[in-house]
Amino acid sequence: MNSLSAKLLRSLTPWRDAKVWRVAFSGGLDSTVLLHLLADLAQQHCLPPLAAVHVHHGIQAVADAWPTHCQAVCAALGLPLQVIHVQVPSGASLERAAREARYGAFARLTASNELLLTAQHRDDQAETLLFRLLRGAGVRGLSAMPPVRPLGGGNLLRPLLDVSRAELERYAAEHRLSWVEDPSNADHQYSRNYLRHQVMPVLTARWPQAALSMSRSAAHLSEARGLLDELAIIDLDAAQTLSDCPWLSLPSLALGPLLGLSAARQRNALSHWLSCFGRLPDTDHWRGWDSLRDAAAEGQPVWRLADGELHRAAGRIWWLSGAWLQRVDGRLPWSSPQHPLPLPGNGQVAFLGPAPTGALQIRYRQGGEIMHLAGRGHRDLKRLLNESTVPGFVRGRLPLLYQGERLLAVANLPALAANPQAGWQLQWLPPNSDQGLS
Image 1 (cartoon, helix red, strand yellow):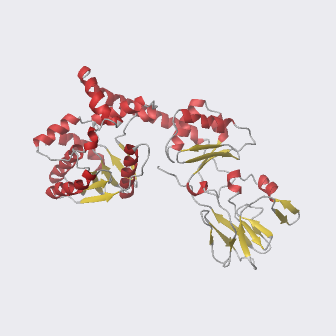
Image 2 (tube, rainbow, N blue to C red):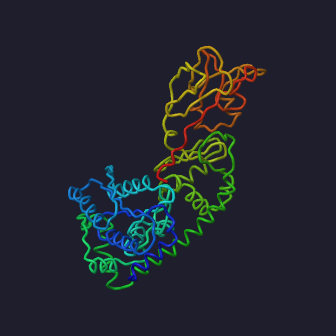
Image 3 (tube, rainbow, N blue to C red):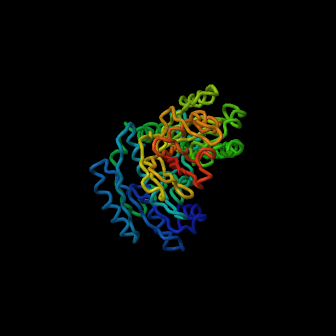
């Protein structure tokens, strides 16, 4: 066994019990070497089933031939290949859009206790660190690519991060491997290509160990990020209390405990929390947090982020995305109240207990609604919602039950949702907040 195979086998030892190992196989040099190494190890050791997956982006005409090449390589190694076609949306960064489409496909494919292996190596890690440094990234970004992270229902592993590109090239030459060359890799308009072909050679000419040293720095920063994550978990613990609306299946935090932290610890805790829901704001965009945090108590500030919105209401901050960002309106007849009524873009409502008779309808708040309460007479709905401390962003979505022009109930609010004498209660199951690119 050569040194490269031995190094790879050691890095894969903790994953020997996985149900399957899939290799992200582009057909390029790096993934070709990884696949060849794994196929060779599988002949000598008892390993999980091995397979390859090729993502076809459809961006370049030349790429149409790559699945055929990948199929030939896999056939020679006796390995199955799955080809997935993805659509890459147009946008400011084609690189980023293609990467997100590719990893989205990988995430959908990777089930529980399955492993996806990618072939990024030490030089890739150094380029990533340098690229993010030039973009002004913080500790999270400068920790570069982690060796392992969750993906889909399983995990993504980068077992070659301690291996140089030169080692992979020597292996490929020794074993006479063939691979495809992506012509876009030579296009210096792409930032990573410019760093690879123009910047890194100059650095390594002066400092031959530059890639190794930068990779070590990324590892140190990854350790620092781990410590910051531990601090964030401690700081978030006090803020993760139940809200006054436990039926709201929305991520939220109590604002008070966050206000007791320094500004730096606030940003650290929020970064850790928001990373579960989508892309994090850049440095300049963090001013939105200051505005939301410092707004007057009676205000209803909103911080709009790439994949959702952060709202402040009822002494908490709330993450909203997906259906929660769409307006709901209209009047919905409820012809079969013995069955739940789907609400377009707003979950569903149902009765607990026998439904009231007569023509029923679900409406949404328009303003000026009046509701009759036993023992209290007619009351303005706005005041009743204030008494129930319902967050402002929920009020326009609360299903209102009408019988003719009479407001009978407001879903889910303890004092307004039920008729104890008739034995029924109106229950609303809101839509879940779509947690974006997590």
